[in-house]
Image (tube, rainbow, N blue to C red):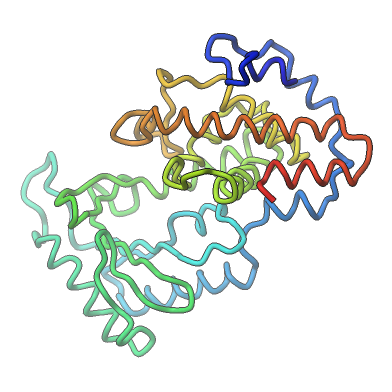
Length: 319
């Protein structure tokens, strides 16, 4: 496997694609020498108790804001792609009485973004559940509970039931489109309907765990971009054997994506591999660091004992 990943100098090759049928060879091999609990350790999401806590907070926010808002989870908790100790939850507060004027006539209920945020802040602070815990962030209203809650005020474009919605950054002074429901649905489709055997989401979690453990600089690969890169990988690179899935998906990311390629977001609304998003220089550094770990993980397939396989697997994840 190594000869397809690296040149003689040890750098990942940018010229040669992996040979056709290589993944089939990898999938035919066995990774069963790795302890199941060790594979599960790196692919685990938040506990059922934490997920239920996030859902309960969403319900509390919905009750505090009232019938004029659609309130739903977004991000890693909603998408089931967060690592086990994920300790923050994003909740969208979509006003059903305000829509954007972008590309349209006058708004039904025109207010400033400052007023939009104030309304959410005031209603949350008036709730006994959240009183005294509310502050304003750049793109959200922060609520200081056991799980850090970011409530994201939003307005709709055409229909409150459909994406895009619009959110606002005070630091940047600009609005932007957001597609949280499309992102969620496309992730469900990739995981459950497109023959990844339920492997897409746990594979995303493995790559996020790897990035947190191993990357020299976490800013090289924010979790959103990691999820998009994994989503971009063809379905047949995934495996219900999650160790093989990590290797196969990793091989594709480091060997079959170049800086000139188009890598769409999970929602399908934009190319993330551009300077304004995931800068290609940072992406290539991410690839170089990932290649070392994928090579190490690949050696697991040739391990002759469980002790050796487990050691290599831990090493691949920086432990």
